Length: 189
Ligand SMILES: Nc1nc2c(ncn2[C@@H]2O[C@H](COP(=O)(O)OP(=O)(O)OP(=O)(O)O)[C@@H](O)[C@H]2O)c(=O)[nH]1
Ligand SMILES: [Mg+2]
Image 1 (cartoon, helix red, strand yellow):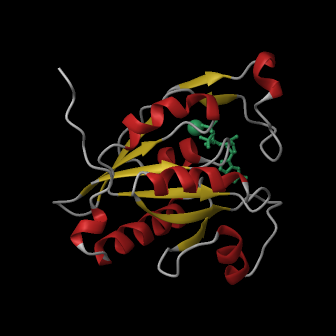
Image 2: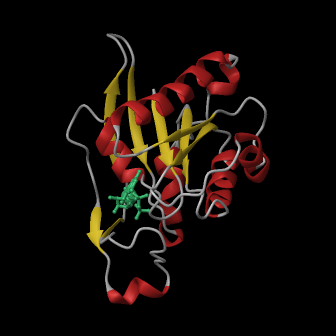
């Protein structure tokens, strides 16, 4: 089962895949430079020194006959051209959000919705993250009533696993057609 891990720049996508993966994750991290400082806003993640420039990949087996293949998207707009290929054929997405800048997740939610992919939202809680009642957050994110909203710490396996399982359970409750994700287009030869 192909699952996307997405969210805005610096929200913890690479971290949560590293936390969850049972194999050494594939990463495409590059050091951030002074040139990118104009567009790479480090508010809330000041110690961040690298950024994903391609994708992340990890895998997590759930029992003997189901493996979740976790594909992380790059967080920055300038890499959005890669999105279509990374998300193709995905059954669901875990979208990370940060309550210090919740509006940064809107664009990603829109992109995932455009692809017809069902998702759950996981709030990655940082030490200075403001806490809000769940119903306020659901309203701010304009979530459908059935969309799971969970809190996690991307560095912590139990809470990260709980977020992923909430997505998996959600996908399993949907009728088969709703879990198809975007159709896989035939390549032109
Ligand atoms: N305190 C705290 N720090 C975190 C948490 N998750 C990630 N971090 C830190 O926040 C920074 C961002 O993490 P990344 O996993 O690189 O974020 P990303 O979403 O993959 O970033 P891009 O790929 O550049 O968009 C890193 O410095 C992490 O160590 C968390 O849950 N709590
Ligand atoms: Mg990353």
